[in-house]
Image (cartoon, rainbow, N blue to C red; front, side):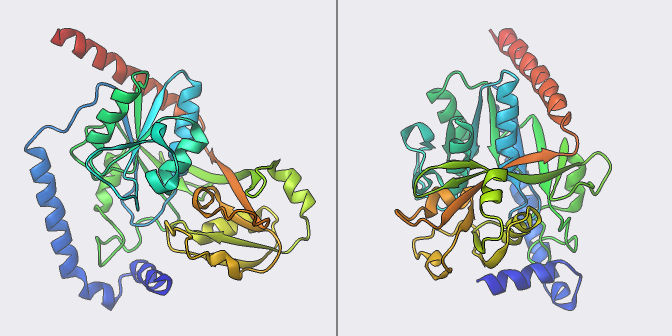
Length: 346
């Protein structure tokens, strides 16, 4: 699986003969997407009574949406908002009704990313493939919620949204082609319709108006004991220690590079498929010594009593932090408009 994924990403970086041969399938994919969009436009998208922010991407694979969602929830809560999050809940059993974090926020119920968001922010979370259904359940269960942040959902046209944030990474748009000849769910022109573009893993945004973002480790949690250390303290204590690292995220190498740049001596790295559930205990083959994992992996891979495991918690650092103030101002205007509309309807 990992080899196939690596070959696909290599294929999608360039316009090669193999990519050319897949173009007819890309046209079919684009045609099907256009048909779905026409179907969605036949009925008005479901309008929530509160502002809705979608954090998504047009590139297949992880680009760093979840850290942006976490950063937004924290920053907007600090500005007086009461956010709630909706998500797909990848890998969960599903069912007709949304699953709410108040009924249990484990990864087995919500999925790894929603579970991480709930744990990292404390905001209520609802998961369901139909985002409007999840929003309705969340607002019913938590009347104080006055803002919805959708983790992914850019292509879910049945959900009305007020702000779109697209997260890119160093892959950019790859070869610029749609699936399966390229890595794009939507054409590159879709970027122009976003309200904000976040370029992950860079201090030099790729286009005017985009915002660069880097993930910075801030603390480390020992999973067996629950002890938490500031990142610099942990790093000093383990200076010169040979460590391993594992990551089941969209781009594992990004995690390994961050650790190496921060001064961690990595003897072994274990990249795993995104959303790997760890039930096969792939970490058992790693050598003695600290094993660093992402916070997303930590919600599912804690092996009782394994003293090797440490979860690295990160924060998103933006090249222009003021963009969240601009977002806050936009959302307040949206909220005021919704209130006037509700008053007029009565």
